[in-house]
Image (cartoon, rainbow, N blue to C red; front, side, top):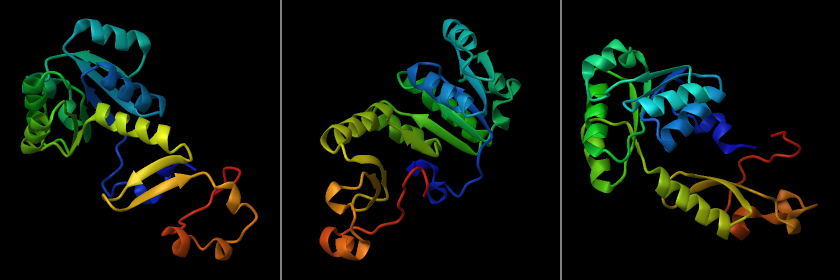
Length: 201
């Protein structure tokens, strides 16, 4: 069972069919390749000719363009404002990242996800309208720490600081017992949402 595939985790906003990814460094390339591999239409953008050529050669997107994302006219001519979801994967160039995000939101892009490299960068991105700000390195570091210290936890979805939905392996001591016998709520403070066996939920 993959938690992220369960319908109640999906945002209420309309599902995107087309994505634009601005910035083709490691993070941007990974986002492009994953979305493209899932069958979505993806446009990859970078101002670096070498990055664009590499992305085109590796076939990680439907279309790849070289352009300056701080130029609203260039974004308009490329049709970027028509995408309902744009990922700004520019982390190291704060000014370029913020200006790009501002351009996208001012021209009506519905959902902009932006990568931040610091708290001040995050604050600026939110000020100009970014809908979601990510710290990929921080998040991956937290995931690695959890994986190393809690190997029975397969996935975790944080609802707030006190509550999470967690996918775990069933402990050996639970095998052959009924839910009434285990008493998850009384003994562990847990509520069971779903059970998966042999890839069936």
